[in-house]
Image (cartoon, rainbow, N blue to C red; front, side, top):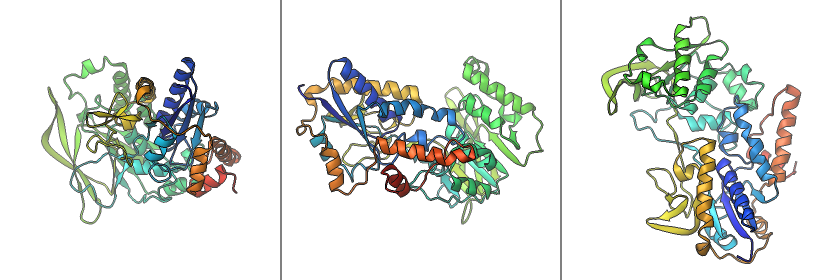
Length: 450
């Protein structure tokens, strides 16, 4: 093609940024040129790395350094604080670009269909994570009034939620945790957090690192139950997996610990499938059914137990949201696609692609995100005969369009400004940063309008 390739990417989390980087390198290796614009609904980039990773996991957030290099390389433009479907539409993109990659991730809670799940005091883990990570679009306060709390799920998010609920807030102060979150956690009367998983202790979905960190919490007893161990006939086979072997050893160490002196307790319950949230006007208990392994998987035993709790957190997975003007599979929570090509039934939609969780569902870590983006980019570059036919290139077209619509967008320089401001807020207190939470303040700092 005679003119540079122009691609829009919707979503500036890891999936979108990796896709932009892979596309840039592939086009340049082929001797071509490319312009890539990232559109992000939040004023700051990085998606769930900024707003989905617990603040006491700074080493995981270290990925931001690699993502930042991509943004600052000069090929990719960032348009933050821009809502797809409102501030910019599919029709706008078709007029301005050869194609679009949707990389909006998954930020809602997957549903849990049990009685009582809508009672006051029952919360989605995704909302709680957004609160403690200082997401600008959630309330600044969270109702932390329960002494006994249930967390449903056996993945890393469940452990993050449990750890944040039971950890003493002063131990979070060296991190980037927002001040309003510290204040909320300081008022919490919590004494016991119960984590429930329907599988056995060797069928969990969290990583050894996440598990070990629980055992390092100050003034928190780890409670596991002997009846949950030695149940699975395939236990020895499972332990041939190194990750499962480490998890088994950690849990066995906890079984030997003396408990009873800490002011808070974190209980791990296995073979426990949630059956109902109980209560008249609000959460009063969680009822679970004991499960057991079968050659086909799991089955209920018919034995039910009730645990008195005043709050329930559902951490059973994430779910994506539909995008205006884009096909969406309501059952799977993804954009229908084949290897990244967006599909309308059996027909691929020209110029439209997907990557990340909106493409494959909310599974997989950073390594999966990179390989996923590579697959999508290969499809995009192989479809040159079906790309959109945009208007002649005008570098100012997008800024002009957003200005005409009154959008106060933020850019890469603005993110650097906000980043430096947050680190400066934390420096006097020996903290990595103090995160700015209100959206309008983030925008003002980014746009240097203070």
